Image (cartoon, rainbow, N blue to C red):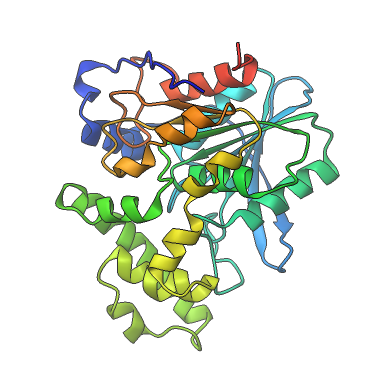
Length: 322
């Protein structure tokens, strides 16, 4: 489809990508949303915690929301979408990836950018136990890559899945990883690394046969983390193999349902390859919007909901082909 012209205009102070990213990630709060937790057993015997929030009246519409790296279903960029959808007669299921709900998961492996099997288990659970006729999937950042990969790699998407939305999505993981290791992203790199190592420290206590405190000291960068843990735990040769096989970019041509991608041009986490212009032009189901501003998950409005949240609702409600 033709590239969409964005109408997003941020408040002046939030035009800087760094400011928008930090404010949205660390300061923004979304209040007055009630979530009810459900724990499900995955096909490999591990568990996943799902946080549900509901519309005021019975509905047959559901949005499944996937968070970003080291996020959770309680992050504002998740609850903002959930609350807006609830107010517009859409139930919301906010997924906590393995180990992201406040409790370490059972297995040595956890989550990663290409872990679509867990999303499939969630969808199977929902369709098998609920009566939703329309299901939408929205992923943010890492969750966006999972969303796009799932929609493009599967040849049997359930008919209930009607729309996909991916925001601030690093669809080319090698390029995004390279950007995260640049000086401009040093504060973010260090925070992600610290959080991931802290979780890995818990893993070392629960799985002492697979990782030791000495191993943890060898991890100096996110590259190291992906080489040592992500690849080792999830069956990849190394970090590069993980990036190559898990990037959603290669699966975009196969997406068969209307799917919206919103990636800001001043998102410092994204490499040039993360703006899939060619793929969007050649696939009538892909809609690519590239606002000039927004940073990483920072599409701030003067008040109320964020731009990407309002665009999500608009994309769900309207026929995107018109």
